[in-house]
Length: 113
Image 1 (cartoon, helix red, strand yellow):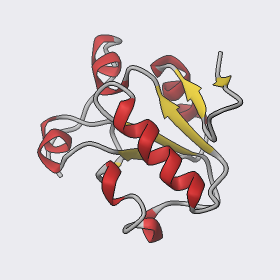
Image 2: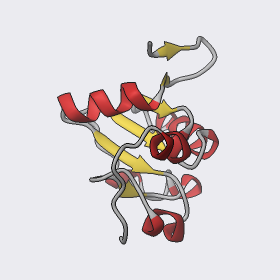
Image 3: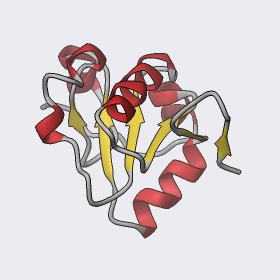
């Protein structure tokens, strides 16, 4: 079940909840990892914005749909989600477990940029 903690501006999702949102809704998925990590395997349809570039690339972040941030394990994506919140974006989610959990669950990954 999605978890909204009072001290965080985002909602936490596990990979199964994230997959369901991706399959059932119009969402944006942002891979907060390094470009080479993204190229090695990422959630299909995701765009790559390194977590520390979130503010600099704010124009690429959707404001009209939910935004899911994912990294390798959930740490860098949480930072990126915090940055997105600082920009005034409110419909934001962090995927706990990141690509590691996504892969373990057997969900598809695309490669390349």
